[in-house]
Length: 242
Image 1 (cartoon, rainbow, N blue to C red):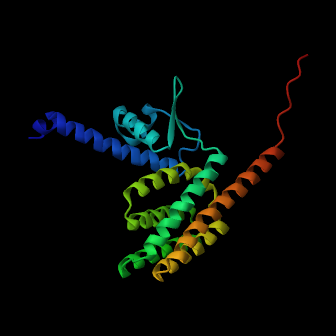
Image 2 (cartoon, rainbow, N blue to C red; image 1 turned 135 degrees about the vertical axis):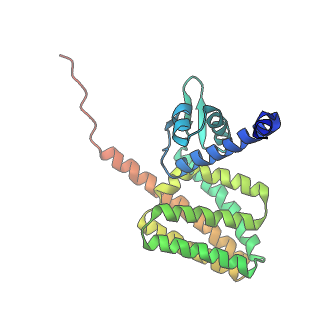
Image 3 (tube, one colour; image 1 turned 90 degrees about the vertical axis):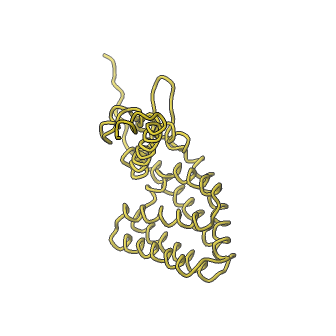
């Protein structure tokens, strides 16, 4: 029976596609967690060995990741984790803020008690991560929180576009996670949930808009500080020919 299934071209194609999706999800996790940093070169053989699959699913995963905006392919050079210039990142924040304004207003028009409770539980989980100074857990719950807000808004096209934008900002978002900033973000999440629960579209939309625009300002400030710090690092003296 197993041999008949494996020899069926349609089943084999489905299995291969499903495996590629799993590989894509794993590589995406590694990128979002910072294991594969911005600009890192990705090789099929290395990742296939690490994940425990053949190179075919990794190759297909690269294609899907490029469509998602997480990697880029350079001719004759290979596949690299995409680097997003600061100017582009700031523009993405602005687009995302407008989308979040819409999401906040829509959700405030009516969520069930159970759905509000779910959002509060995610906010609680982020609070606990802040208390434990656990940036990894905070990042994970933060993604879940914003994903759930999108799902509850019920707009598939908006969700797909939003997630692509969020993926492109992954490096900057991780750099923003300090003990101080996580506490601020957590308070902002509480304000968002409070406004949605109160059924106040204006307040909910504004809370979500400001949350993203505040992230934009922190990103710019962090970038400028990093640039200033790197400028202070002494450069090696140039070699002098005899």
